[in-house]
Length: 480
Image (tube, rainbow, N blue to C red; front, side, top):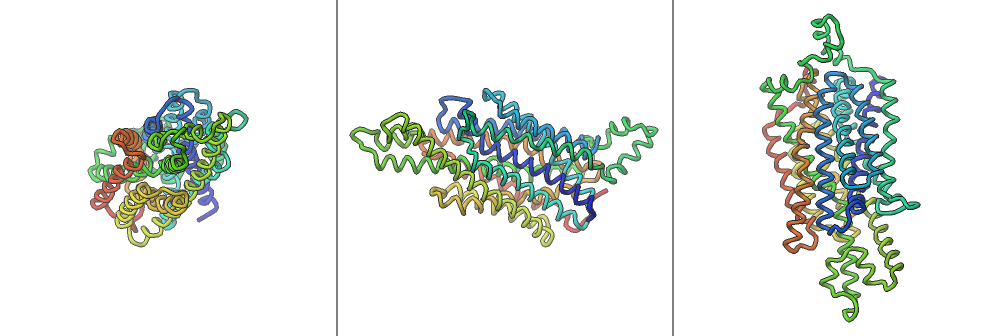
C-alpha cells in the first residue's frame, strides 16, 4: 500500500462515513420531525408516516444507485463520487428547513439519490486502486469505518436531542443542518484523486474506435450499459444473486433494525404509563385502562395539576428518552462496525457463502429477541449491541462480494444494481412495518411495533436461501 493507496482509501471511507452519518441522523430525527410537521397523529399513525418518509428516502437511494452506478462506469469513479457527495450534503441540510411533510419527503428523496450513487462509485474506486491482496481488507474496513458516521450521529444526538429545542429551534432541524459538512470533502476529493488505471484502460478500445474522441468514448453503450450486462447469462445470474442478498439485508436493517429509536421510546412510554397507572388516584385521575393509550403530554397532565409543571414533566421525559436512544444507537453502531469487520476476517478464512448464511441467521435471531424482549432501560445496553453486530455484519460481505461479481467495464453499474435496485423493494419494508403496526394496533396490541418487527424478520431467510445458490469468489482475482 503506497501513500496514494491510503489517500484513496481515506477519501472513499470519509465519503461513506458522512453517508452513514446522514442515514443515522434521519433515523434519529424522522419521528420527531413528522410529529412536528403533521399534527394530531396517534402512535400507530406516527409510525406509519415515519415509514412513508423512510420509504421515499430509500426510493431516492435506489434511484441514485442506478443512475450514478452507470455514471461511474461512463464518466469515471472520482467525478461520480464527488457529485454524489455534494448532492446528499445539500439536501440533508435543506431538510432542516422543511415546513410540511411533503417538502421534508422531497428533500429526503433527493438526498437518497446522492447516497445511493456515492456507495457504488466509492467501492469501485477502492477495489480498482488498492493492491489485490489488500482488496478484501480495505473494502471490509471501508464498510465498517462507515459505521463511524452512525456513531458520530448517535453521539451528537445524546447532547443535541432531536426532541429538544434550542433558542426556539427544534433539535431535529439542527441535526439536519450538520449535514452540510460533507460538501467540503467533495472539493478535496475532486482536487487530489485521479481515475483508476483499470478504468482508463477499459475505455481505451472505445477511444481508438472513435478516433480518440473522449465524448464518444464516454458515451459508448458498452460501458455501464445495463442491456449489455443482462445479455451475459453469467452476469445476469450474478445480478439476481446480488440483488436478493442486498434485499434481505437492507430490508432487515431499514425495515426493522433502524427502528430501535422508536422501540426504545415506546418501551419508555410503556414504563411511564405503568408508573402513572400505579400511582393514579382512581377517584380523580383517569383509570389505568385509559392511561395505557395516553402520550407523554397526556400522562404529564394526569400527574401534574399545573399546566406549566405538566409541560416541564413531559419535556423531562422526552430528554431522558433522547439520551437513552442516543446511547443505545451509539452502542448499536459500534457493535455494527465490529460485526462488519468480523465478517471481513471470517470471510477471508471460511469463504463468502458460509459467513453470509451464518450472518443472516444470527440477524433473524437477534431481531426476534430484541424486539420481543426489550422492556427496561438496562436492556438497551446489551440487546442493541447484539442486534447491531448481527444485523449489520453482512454489509461487510456486500462491500467485498459485489465488486468480485463483475468485470471492470460493468463494476460500478453492477454494484449499483445489486445494492440499490434491491432498495426499490426494500423501500416497502418500512412501509410494511408501518402498515403492520396499524394492523396490530387495531387488534388490540399495546406495542404494535414489536409484533410488526418480529413478523418482518422472516425476510432474513431470503438471504439464507439465496446464498446457497451463489458462486464462491474467495481467492479469485477481480474479473477484467
